[in-house]
Structures are given as structure tokens and as C-alpha cells.
Length: 96
Ligand SMILES: [Zn+2]
Ligand SMILES: [Zn+2]
Image 1 (cartoon, helix red, strand yellow):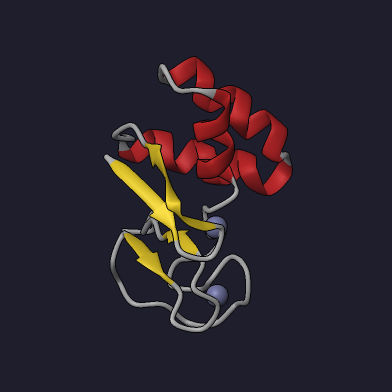
Image 2: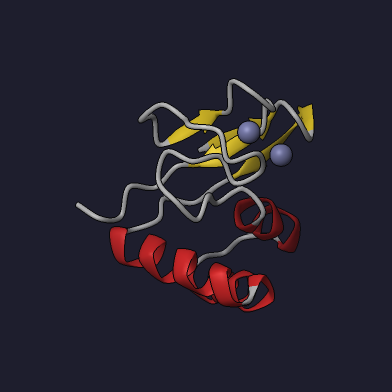
């Protein structure tokens, strides 16, 4: 999947692998403790460039339907743009 963030740079696209539910859980948890560890973990799970891995990690929202950047509420789309700050969110619903 190719994706971009309107806030960072709408002209720069990133290639994102298909993450399994378990991978998403692991990455979200690691990201809360140490974004650097989360970046390393992505790179052991998938063939992904450092640039793409950093993009993923910096756009995962810690809380479902809450923007990682401005804490405003989001819709239910898995990859969604915040209506307030225009930042992309990896809006993973991991509680179901
Ligand atoms: Zn961004
Ligand atoms: Zn926002």
C-alpha cells in the first residue's frame, strides 16, 4: 500500500507493508515505550526502508480514534487524516 501524509508532505509517498493484527499490537506497544525499538522491530518483520519505517512509527496513534498529534477525535477509517491538523493517523483498532 502506498500512503502519504497531507501535513508532512502530500507529494511524498511511502510504501507500507500489510501488517498482521499481532504485528500491529506489538508495534503500537513498542512505540509507546521506545519509537527507536519499534522502528527496529518493523525492519525485522518486513522488508522496509528505514525512511518508510520511520514514517509508520511516527504516524501510529497510541489511542484508537484519537489523533497522535493534536488529540482531536478521528473517524473509524484505519488510515485516516485528522480533520483538525491534517496529519495522517495509523488508526489501528486493536481492542476488538
Ligand atoms: Zn505526517
Ligand atoms: Zn490532529
